[in-house]
Image (cartoon, rainbow, N blue to C red; front, side):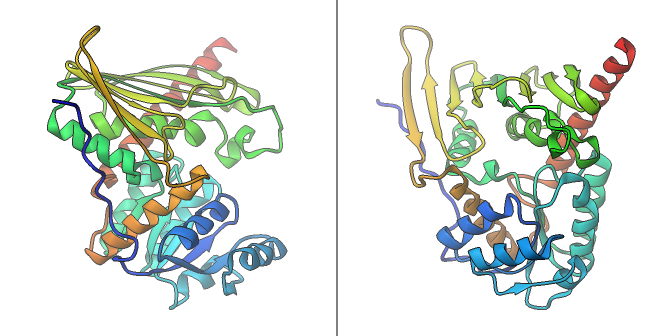
Amino acid sequence: MSLTLPAPSLPDPTAVPALRWGVIGTGIAGKFVHAIHAHTAQRAVAVTARDRAKTEAFAAEHGIARVLPSIEALVADPEVDVVYVATPHPLHRDQALAAIAAGKHVLIEKPIAMSADEAREITDAGRAAGVLVMEAMWTRYLPQSDVMRRVLADGAIGDVRLVTADFGFTMPYLPEHRLWNPELGGGALLDAGVYPLSFAASVLGAPTEIVTRGDSGPGGVDVRADLLLSYASGARAFASTSLQTALPVTAAVLGSSGRIEIGSPFFGPSSISVTIGGVGSSETTTFTDSRFEAVHDGLGYQATALASYVAEGRVESPVHTHDDVVGVMHVIDVARAAISADASTSA
């Protein structure tokens, strides 16, 4: 019998509520708004950001009707159903809490905040207010991720022994760039490392032990981090991130009877291969998500998922729970502290 993969099962973009989105920030938000307008029923209706001229140009480019003068005006707008927070990490907490206090659902760019404590404050506030709070970890909502969950649930690769994932790139030192500025949440872990750590959490949950090796760079930001995570099941995960090395940006789940491999970039629409059996007697099958020419067009999947959860009255994503979000931030907290301590000791 030939090996076959389950078909991905995702919400139909035409069968979920067409929510009205208010956007804070104009950076990654451009790719997100393009994706939802091109591939979903979701619509951005208002935007606010610090630079009025840039914000007006952004609105004109993306067909957004209203440029609002402040975050307060945006979250209070009765024609906004959900707020998308797409600003630098240190601003996420206050902006998310403002949206929640105004009774809005909120999608917050990764990382959801600067620490596990901030993440828990945001998710607790959302739950108390009865609104949906999601981190924009779009990887969780891709077709390949649904296929992976189904393969794992079926036990096709046996007991999971090891998860690997990496995301790193070479970033020239530019003191004014946010990645090199600790006050803007700079460093590899918060910006890129959150992806492999979230991937490991999606398979194995929260680790029982965290071992970190890393390096600090200019301004004290972490420029490299390699984490070995251990779990109660006996499984381990290895996650790597860097601002100094162009890593392959792949991920894998290795089990007692087979393995799952996610193509590059694993965090966006790519491919999933499942291999069953050992050396000399294995069989592999692959699903490739070739729907989009531009990888970030896959950002629309999470917007459709959010709308489906709103329709169901949820306050958290069933495939990316609040505990999961906070747990990943805890791992990042521990890793950043270890790298900072090592830097202080060696100074």
